[in-house]
Length: 109
Image (cartoon, rainbow, N blue to C red; front, side):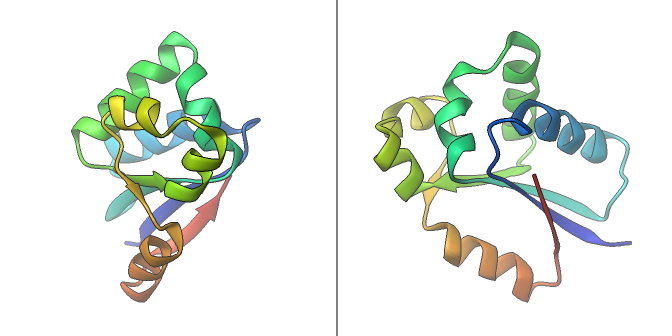
C-alpha cells in the first residue's frame, strides 16, 4: 500500500481536494495520507464553505494536515488566520522533501 502526500495549491480544487483527502483517510485507501497547502490554496483556507471547513478541521484533528506554506501565508497576509485554524506554517520545500524522501507519492491539486 502506498503513502500519499496531497499537495494542494489550486484555489479551484481546494474544497474537492480536502474532501478527497478526508475520504481517502477514512476509507484507508492508502497506508498514510498527509496534506500540505501552498500557493493560492493557503489564502482560500480562510473562506471555505461550511462543509469543507468541517472537513479541514477533522483532517487537522487526526493529524493528516502537515502544514501550510509560511511564504504563501505571509504574502497573502493570512498567517494569523491560518494559525487560528490550528494549521502549522512551515517552509514547504523542506516538508515536501521529508515526505518524498520517506517514500510518499505526491498527488497535486
